[in-house]
Image 1 (tube, rainbow, N blue to C red):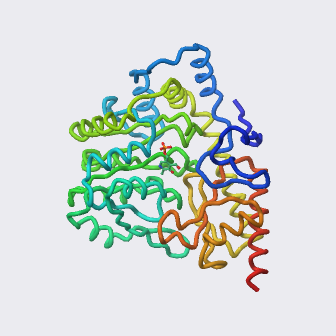
Image 2: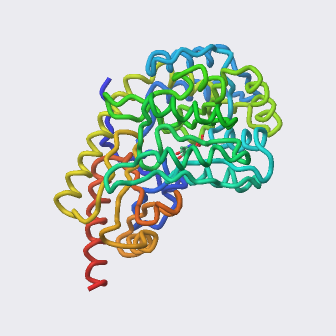
Length: 390
Ligand SMILES: Cc1ncc(COP(=O)(O)O)c(C=O)c1O
């Protein structure tokens, strides 16, 4: 079935966090998409709504089969159905696991720049953020292994939050890198939470590797968070899962999620997830092709029109990481300037760690017409700022 990703759906007036902005603004910040979800999922949700009764919901075996079937079919990872635990979201799962698996004052390691909410899940629970800064060579990011090993070997470091693929720079970690991270963590008694929420959003031919699939060491020492919500634009439905192959760790995770009351689905969460993971393939493949085109559109535009803004090359997520170091030492200031001068609303890179200071994050999951509008505003903003600085 052909899908029309060019269609512009007005999201104003729907209590959308992203679009709750003044009329002249174009939001390209928070990570949800401006595309309607797959018709197969809408149909499942409508059917559920038509039933008219919305009582407490259980997690059926069909949900486990749908999730396990998707990871087997799409990512070559065979999981046992009973490794899966339902959760209302990836962030609730991470925060809950942080509380269960570490104590106040311990260190949780993250590789920056990284999804900003990781910092909240750590700090709001009284744990310390330890940054293993990814090194940037002016084009790509690499893991600083020496630094990673030294920080993992601190006995106060008991947990690592991995982002695979990485938001915001779009790194897809290789099997070798994941194996090495897993070995280092296990050797230092550091557990791993692998957030794989962006895993389906890669360009064709650039497949991600599930952390737990790499080795028995990785599987036994990790909790993996997954969801259909980024992939199919369902964030508001609150439907996610954790994969925990180790029975003891799974027991702890189940207790944590239950104690924090984030283990029970709303009336739509299960049906939507089953529809996504059993009937969403075709839509997703079309979406990936559209996003790849959007990425190329940005790359070509920047090269031709604003070469002073660099694009960190990536093949995952719909978030682009823009290197603004040639135009400003403070991208947060530039971000505010862009918003007030042109209405273009991007995310300032500093939110993702101190090494994001000279970067902006741009969400390109929108119809090409909106993307072109955004790029035009970006160009106008850069030109205007150059004039101000002269
Ligand atoms: C890496 C990452 N994890 C988790 C989330 C949010 O997950 P949830 O809405 O399931 O809590 C996001 C949203 O942007 C994300 O980028």
